[in-house]
Image (cartoon, rainbow, N blue to C red; front, side):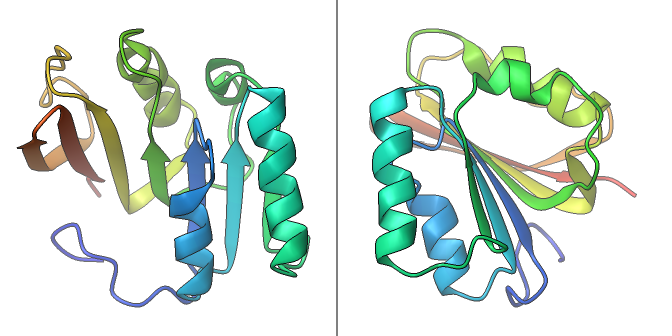
Length: 153
């Protein structure tokens, strides 16, 4: 992966935090990602996501739904990191700033991995304040702000 681009999806592991419908992880799987882990705390959304995975006949070894708060999920050392971590927290709760330290400190993002966050436009984030991450994109789209970092070697 160079300059924030995924050069082919084969072998890519995706962590979809605050997964909701799971659109990002499902798209990655459809493009050939080897595995996606969806973390969703809302019971109804987690159930629908699990049903969709079954309906799409995605094997259990390629996808897992974890019904848990993202902060609690990240509060432990990762057994294996991910090449893509996507964070799409509910607006107005400053959750991005609460989960970024866990992603970085506990090895959830591999070297050269991409961390992408979709947050509200007005969220105060100091994009360069996270050690080991290089900001590669900070763009506003109306009410939405997209931030992308790459983990330094």
